[in-house]
Image (tube, rainbow, N blue to C red; front, side, top):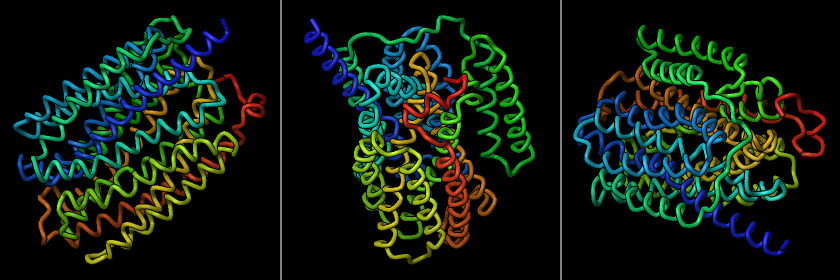
Length: 474
């Protein structure tokens, strides 16, 4: 009997790892592939600078708005159910985006893409953490993160090649077969259903407050140069504070903020993740524009060069994941954050004729820093909560990543708007464009340094020691 149970458990673990890692490839792939295609999209649809940035930002915004409520609903009603639905929505939206005739239509399709991605991202990590025991968590999360980075690494190369040979629309059409494969594999191989013990009511009011806070904050940040944008950003901050207080007092919150107030490891690890992505996500966006505009590279050539960073991330994450089962997360993750601070600071020296081998070397260095940070930090977050809250914790992992990515893109957008204005990037604008890149990377290096502090300050994360340190958030 025990042998039969063991075989079933092994089969379940393998099937869950297969479908969850495959799906985790999709969301970052479409981000990095579309980033490389931005100049082609701009030329085809006559998109101005701010709208161009929104093509990338809206995807992350709707994804972020989806993560938290879906994490709660999945804990209540079943994680596989929302996982599968998300794959379907993502695939359909990708197909529609391929036929966009203007910027507004493309932005709308990208928003729907983000909703679908948010559904399977918020549940994929929770499914894996529900199935695998704690002693295997480090290596499993390492593989999951590696799949994310493989998506990032393949995205620039494939996106650049498709854009050059078939046009930018082919990137979205590619999502149709990939999405269908994930849906079929989920239906055939991911057996069972997982839900937490939470049977309380769903907080619709809190969800609406959360959506309002996220949307106004992000949109306001992207238009911060206007009085209207500054007002929206302030409204987002105020609404976020109201949401926090509402969740703290609600008997069945959509996001249990007491995880932050009573769990030191969870709080500092989450803040470190937020700052890491805030500092680094715009690197690919800015370097893609830099390589194509200032260095004069083709989309395919730029994508091939940019692939170096996520390749190192993909190769390093499983190795660091295994290390995190033996070495404290604070040491590994903090090392990664320090490397990120150094790497982004180096890019403040970019010039009109910076050698490409130097750019490549720094991309590799940044990739190693990401690999050292991500797996141990995620493992620390997921290991710091009870399994009934895995859906919410997985949603928080996603929201920290996406909020950070949106903050990074908002920073880049605001700097570009202030230093260039809402105009097309032409050769006459290259010197000012280069100055704006330097400004963004100075800010990125500072954010990484602050993130390194929080990463180290999280304290001990080994299970046998942490049990005596955790507060009521556990």
